[in-house]
Length: 347
Image 1 (tube, rainbow, N blue to C red):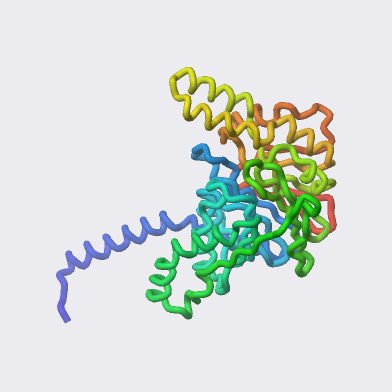
Image 2: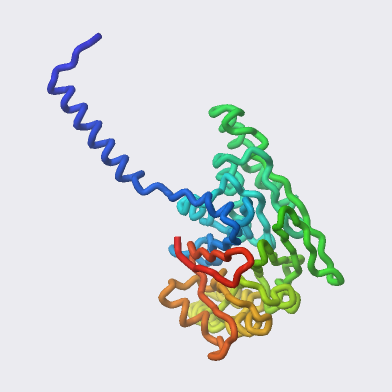
C-alpha cells in the first residue's frame, strides 16, 4: 500500500469536502415526492404546459395531467412538459396513458420523452396512447426514433432494471363520427374517460376529453373554435381547461409583420385566427355550460403572467356565473371526491 504525504491527504480531503458541498447544494433541492396524489381519493388537475407553438420561457407546450384513483393520464405532451413533470415530482412512473387531442407538433412533440421518463421512472409495460385516427402512425414513428436508445439502455442497465416492454407504447384509435360525436372509451375502477369531437378544421378528426372520478369532473378542450359538442359535454363540469387565442394581438402582429415586408409569417399568423377560440367566446361557452371553473390554457400568444390576465380575461361578463383563471405551468387544482370543494396551488 502506498502512503501519501499528509499534505496531499489534506488537500484531497478538502477537495472532496468542497465537491461534496457543491453536490449537496446542487441536489439539495430535489423534487418533492408527489406520489400521494395517486391515492388520496381526489381528482387532481395539473397544468404541465400552458403555452403554444410560439416560444416562451414561462410556458411549456400544451399538456394537462389528470391524477385519480392510482392512475395518471396526460392530455397532450407539448415541448418542455416532461421536464416540468419531473421537476415537480409527479409520479411519472405510474403513468397509465397519454390522450392526444390531435397531431400538431406542439401537442405531440414530447411523446418520446414521456415514454422514456415513465419507463425509467418504473413503468414496466407498454404505455397506452389514445387519440383520433392516425394515432398508431404517430406512436410507431416515435417508437422507431427511440428504438436504438431503448436497446442501449437495456444493454447497459439490464432487463431486470429496465424491462424492454416498458420502453414501448401502443397506439389506440378512438373512433368517433358526426352521428356519434362522443364516446366513453375507458371505464375502470371508478375512472371514466369520454372522447368527443371538436372543430379544428382542416385538422380532422380532432378531439377533447372529459374525465370523471369520485363525483368530480374535468374537460380538456384540445384545439378548437367554439364548439357546440364541447359545450354539451362540459355541462356542469367542475373544471374546463380550454384553449384561447387573442385575435387582437395576433391580428396586430400579422399587420406589423406585413408592413415590415414579412408577408410569409404574417399569413401564417392570420391562418391561426380561424381555428382557435377568442377570449369572449371561451367565457361565453363556460357561462352557458355552467362550468364551475374555467382554466384558460394553450395561450396564443403565450404572454407572461403579468400581461396574460388583462388580455385573456377580456370579454368575461361582470356577472359571469362561473369562476375563471388564466392557467400557468405548475397550476394544481385538487377536487376532493363527492364534494364541491377545490383548492388551487402552484408547484
